[in-house]
Image 1: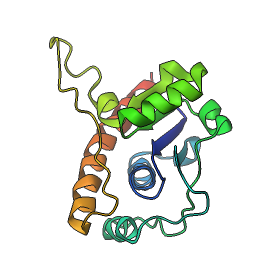
Image 2: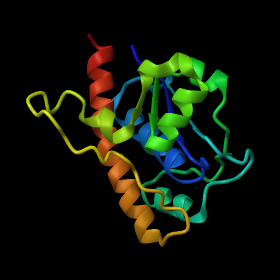
Image 3: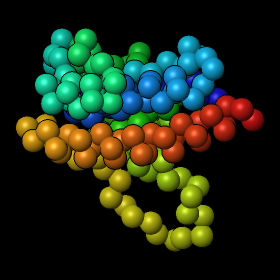
Image 4: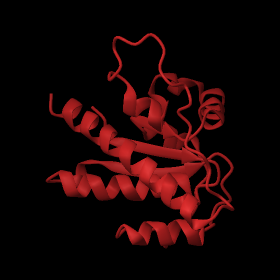
Length: 167
């Protein structure tokens, strides 16, 4: 049963904090009691205390999500241990966590990878480019594309989690 989800990117100022905000919003919209879930985000190279980028704040505000008070957090053992599922943005994040925290091999996935698991049972090889590109230092339009991509995949993931938790 998945109750605690950790989203991970590099600095915890763009992708992972956007994913956390989006997931919390869709979770609240689709469940009667979202308090049963714990959603966190962190970065493998986060400078603790940093705020999200202005672009990330603006793009999330466009979706009715306020991430302006978020403070960047470094990935630490306690966060990794309490997570039932760790969703990362790129293979670098996945490799870093698997190397540093060897005890969590079976609960870490790329977001797009986890969103597609089980959907292509008869296909031998599916698209291996599951990474969510970093929008840092790019125009606001790029952040909007990343936010849409995250939302699309997170909606699929939420459906899987709710279905699994209702078994």
